[in-house]
Length: 450
Ligand SMILES: [Fe+2]
Ligand SMILES: [Fe+2]
Image (tube, rainbow, N blue to C red; front, side, top):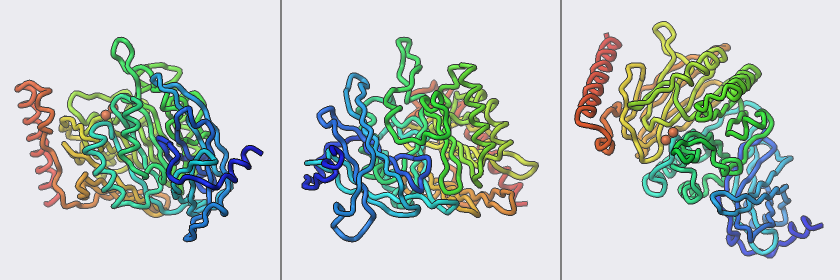
């Protein structure tokens, strides 16, 4: 009766519901279930969510029904808030809906829209962002604006860790503000890593921020509870399987956790009916930035990824763009390892020869266009220029990788903002490595032209 009364409280003050951190989640079946997550102050304990089919008519209320809402109070950083999670089920595939949230009586949000997924394999696009982290309210919003303009109908926004610098409450508020209404209308998937961990007294980041557990709506059907609690996830979207791995937790060298993640990852890969497989993990397999090493990750996961034909591994952490392909005789093949950076903090590249293409001192976003016949991966810089593009074609049960030409020259210059971090000698060494990398690339280019 209470729910009915709340649903019927139509006389409302639109746009006056004081919600924070509103986002669409990823669900077990995106063609029939949609989840919405937000938070309020403790003064707003009752929450209601309504859904209506998209229509040109302004009479949305009479067509609306309520979803199920779960509300829980948490105390993060000494700040008490109520986190609300609404679930709309029984939806039609490939259908646009509108939803709003509110207190059920006086105050409501505006109406937001979303589209359910197709029931089976079908073409879709998505955006991948790495290391938003810094420059959230000054340099980063232009990246969001460009990404939204180039790929306005992205079904999914994927964040590969380091969403903020210290996982603080005000930083998450800035993260949501930087995206405007994007996160309220596009499914959000994110994997946590080192900057989602709080520091202990010794200064080491050793505990995943409790906020992470109620920040986004996440699928709950394929991941054991103990792994899900640490940010690992697996879900399918229109013919593509996504596996999200918390690589930071592996650094704790907990053999039980490591064995459990490896076992679960292999299960997700082995029992995968989808044509495409994308892994998102923050720390890259191959170090890209100067002074970094990631051999543990490579040793543990690379054999699995190659054995089960993972197509893309999307990362961040090194604040440099890089594309690395898997050698196959004289050809290059999948998995393709991408590292990128969306925020304003950039690191010096290490100029390793195994890198096919790097992008130094850049803010970027990536658009993936995924369909039954091919996967097109495009990296754009913050100015909207196409910086890198690969195409993977699926034909007769096999895959072929093509690197498409782009007009923009490889960005290899050292980021001048990092100069203060190095001695003169170290900087000179980096400049020499940069020149060596450039010479190597020119030699390779000449060989190809012969
Ligand atoms: Fe990181
Ligand atoms: Fe980072």
